Image (cartoon, helix red, strand yellow):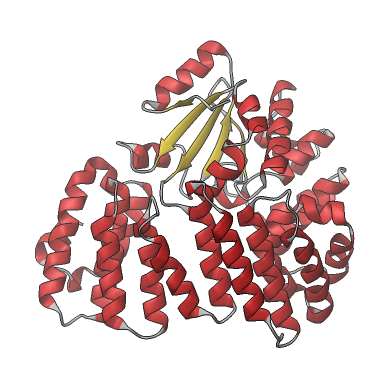
Length: 433
């Protein structure tokens, strides 16, 4: 069952949701974004999610579509991907985290729909929890614990500070699983974690698995802020080893776990054969991957794992090998530029950033890549007036191609970086900023 995505006029999609009295699920992303590709392969391709999606309207807002950045600014969308579930009246039910694996995402989606059907939302649950005006149901606590705080953009929090809000929610929660997840979020936001609580979590296979997204992405940070490094690294490394061999998980999540396992091993002591293990994991994962969306995020994870293991040359070769087959090679060219920077190859940095810009597709992506290239030239070759002038001319063309969207949301953030350096820019570009 394929998902029937709406696109084009978001106001029309919201009006249709209102007319049909159906929630609307919005996916904001970009073709080159690794987490977006993981969402497509791990969540949207699942039959279970497609079945749920049939009960709502689904809308895809591509960051490179006409007017997309202005729409994103209006609805407070920034990070790719952002996943929003709207009520039929256009209010937000919740924002869902993209890092969940498919099984857990479907469960969180079910909870969000159930909370909506009961007449509530993340905003209503947050207000009730903080004011203690009423007791929250277990599903409302689950909704708050699975809210995408990373992509909130002030939509739910408003002027509230993140860390104290999460700490208060964790303390108030009457749903033990939700309280555990909220404590993890609060620890990362505040920069302070409880080592005993982390050890207890890691000793519970079910609870650790339900928070795999946080542990896979932020486990190293949690250990750094909790102390008792060796004890926690051993425990998390053991859990990660189990996930790395769990065939029920998608290939990118297994490789993420293998990377986490390697990082924990390096915290404990130099490990014989570690590099060979990482290489074998990467080779096996890439050899088995044929889905273009899965492969895009898999390559991104593989490169990070190889670099973490001290295998920079092998990471660069993976990127070079992938360019001919990737649907968004210009994204991996940015990684090749970063690789050249690590070995102080200035010419290589500028060459790859230039190639990435030349190959980039879509008005927003081209504008953002162009700023990256020009900024790098200003930093690394400020004496190259010819190259600076050529880059400025090309960027002016991309700004014009983006139209009004050039000064909205992600595009605006990039142009503001250049505006701060007007003295270094050719007059025509400086005036356009």
